Structure formats: structure tokens, C-alpha cells
Amino acid sequence: MSRTTAVPAQGETDASGPAGMGTAAGVALITVLTSMPLFLVGATSTLINRELGWDAEDTGLLLAAYWFASLLGAFLSRKVEVPVSAETTVGVASFATAVGLALGAWAGGVGLVAGTAFGGLVYGYSQPHTNSLLMRHCARRVQGFAFGLKQAAVPMATLLGSVAVPALAVPYGWRAVFLSAAGVCALYGVVGLCARRGGRGAAPARAATPPLKLNSQLLGLAVAGLCGAMVGNSLGGFLIASGTHGGLALSTAGFLAAAGSVVNIAVRLAAGVVVDRGRYAPRALLWQLYAVGALGTSLLALNGGVAVSVAGALLAFGGGWGWAGLLHYVAGVSFPAAAARATAFTQMGVSLGGACGPMLFGWLVTREGFGPAWLVLTAVGVVAALLVPVLGRRAARSADDAASGATESEFKSVA
Image 1: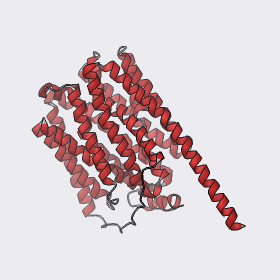
Image 2: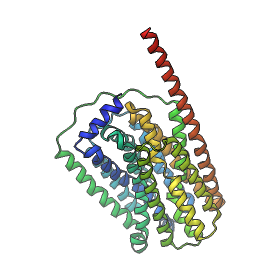
Image 3: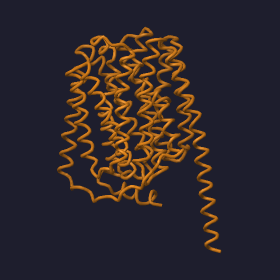
Image 4: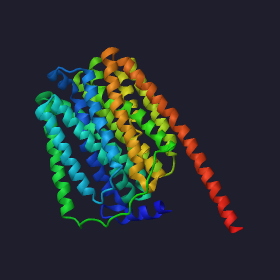
């Protein structure tokens, strides 16, 4: 009852805009910024490796550092109450990301590892709280779109990183890209904190959210997120390198990654709209996206020329990375009174997959090549596609059992 009345009503009258879409836009923007330490590494990995003498395995370890730190951040977020000010959260996270990016550009080597890991910690810590903000401030009829918008910000970061390769990295070097991104993050941090200071003051304290322990439904969603993130983050980290290895020019491979990011953004937004209109079951759409992504990575494994690579990249980006908004949305609406803690579990799965995927992919590329590495990710995507329908059937049975129990209890009380 509370989810269908209190939450939408708050979103309808919230100062952040009609139905809370101002909050959704702010959450999406901070997601772009806090994703930058990860995807700038992937986009500029060829130049970083050339300067520092690293290889694909080293890149995988660097990306893993971001996601292991993100896992820690998501775990820590479960112990803290949801912040009452979106602006403060946005401002602090943006400043912290700027520090990590600047450290990587200034120090290189160990500094790049430390800055990337610090950025991951910020990302993982902030994600469950921003998920809760969407549940609290967005009307029920647009929550799917709000989650899709937020998660569309992740491929937007990939898109910006990919475009930065021909625009900045090729003529000026990878450090210029990192410093430019740090400047943007710092500027947005100032804007966010000033907006908070000039606002209406702190909101009244909220009641503590109920405890939420790991259960079979959350565990299954976390595992699905783990598998999907292994695929998606390997795409973000290695598609450009895979393309250049297959004969594409660096700029061409960068634009291909950018096109994949555009498709990914469109899929995440469209999935949210479809779910909001009630025309498709979220879990059904979720497993089908995983299946499409597996098809895409299988085409990338073929290395069958430009046309096959383009088709594989677009399918892999659209399906194999278009699921993120739906995953967190399903977790949030399944446990609306504890959305932050529920999505903290799914975020931990995503973070662990984000760490293991690129690390495994880099290890496979170094020893076996890109083809076998993409085949392994295809198998991982198939596992995710098979897991989600099983979870859906179990959740439906649990709901039926609960409804039957409620009906029987109600009958006895009337009798």
C-alpha cells in the first residue's frame, strides 16, 4: 500500500520537477561522472599501455580494481541511512571522482591504480542511495524510465570516453582526457554543493528502513547482475582494443564503441518506458536482453570482418549491457520499503562481475586471443539468460502462496 500511494505522491509534488524527473536527471548525471574513472581507462587503454609498458592483462587488473572497490562501496552503503539531500550526495561524489581522475593523470602507474580504485569506491557507495532517491521521489508511473535513464548514463560515460579518443587522446595524450574529465567533475561538484546550500534546508529525518537480509530472490538477481556485468564491462574495457586487433583503425574502433553506446542508451530508456506502460513483464524482457547480448558476443568471437564486428558490437552493447536498469528496478520494486538495501545487493553482484569480467577477459586475451575470450563471455551471458526465468517462476510461486495464505486468514477472521 505504501509503495502505491506515499511514494508516487511524493514524486508528484517534489520540488525536483514533475513526477520527480529532476531528481532522475541529477542521478543520471552523477552516474555519468562517477563512471568516468572506469570507462576512460577502457577507452584510452591502448595509449596507457603504450606509455606504461602494460598489456591487456594489466588493463583487466586496473578495471578490476575499480569494481572491487565498487563492491566495497556498495557493501558499506548498506550500513548507512539514505541521505536526505540529493545535492549533497551529488556534490561530494563528484568532487571525490575529480580527485581520483586527477591523481591518475598526475601520477600514472600506481597513482592510476589508486585513483581508479578510489573512483570505484565512490561509485559503489553512491549507487544504492541514488536508487532509493528514485524510488522516493519519482512517481510510480515513471520509475522504470527513471531507472533506465540512470543506467543509460553508464553507456553515456562509455560514449564520452570513446569520443574523447579521437578528439583529445590521439592529439594530446590520455592524461589530457583524464584532466579534462576531472575539471568537469569538480565544476559539477561546486554546482551541486552550492545548490544544496542555497536550497530550503535539510529535509525532515526519515524513519529507519527495515532490515533486509540476503534471500534467494536477491541472491539470484545479484548473480544475474554478476554475469551481465562480466559481459558489459568487458565490452566497455576491451571493444576498442579488440577492434584494432581485428584490423580497424583506432579512431574507427572508437566510433564503433560510441555507436554501441548510443544503442545501449536507447535500449535502457526504451526498456523503462515499456515496463512503465505495463506492456511487458520486466523479468521476461530482462532474460531476452541477456540472450541478445550473448548472440552479439558470439559474433565478436568470429572476427568475420567489419560487418560482423559491427553487428556483434551493436547486439552486445544493446542486449548484453541493456539490462542494468531493469535489474535494479526489479530489486527495488520487489522490496520497496528497503530499496537502497535491496539494490545494494544487486550492485554488489554487478560490481563483482565488473571486476571479474575484465580481469578474466584480459587474462584470456593475453593467453588465447580475443576470439576465445568473447566465447567465454557468450557462455556467461547464456547463464544469465537462463537464470532470470527461474527466478521469475519462484517469485510468482511465492506471491501465489502469500496471496493464498492471506485469503485463508481473511476467511477465518470473517468466519
